Image (cartoon, rainbow, N blue to C red; front, side):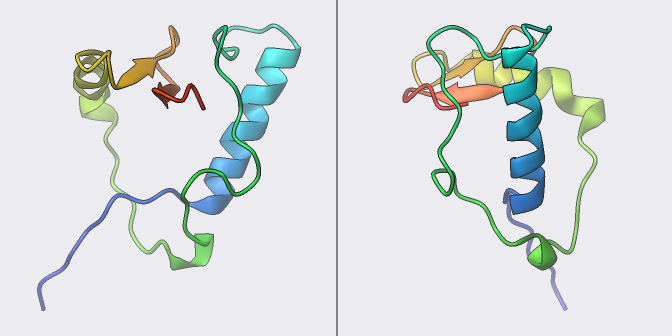
Length: 93
């Protein structure tokens, strides 16, 4: 049976990463929210229930290329200086 993979965001991971970004921003730590960006409101970003994610793929070997590709589309997406977060033109991290 062929497999079909789709990129989705796990709801629990989204919540954990958003909370971590909020803490770094409040504490003024490296990786804080860039000026002008904002955190998403509850339910504002698309995600799927965590129990529905069946497969993860480690992309750490190509992360630099992924970040460079995002930065190459500066009119559509902004990449934080840390390279860990990005925002579309709406500036929602």
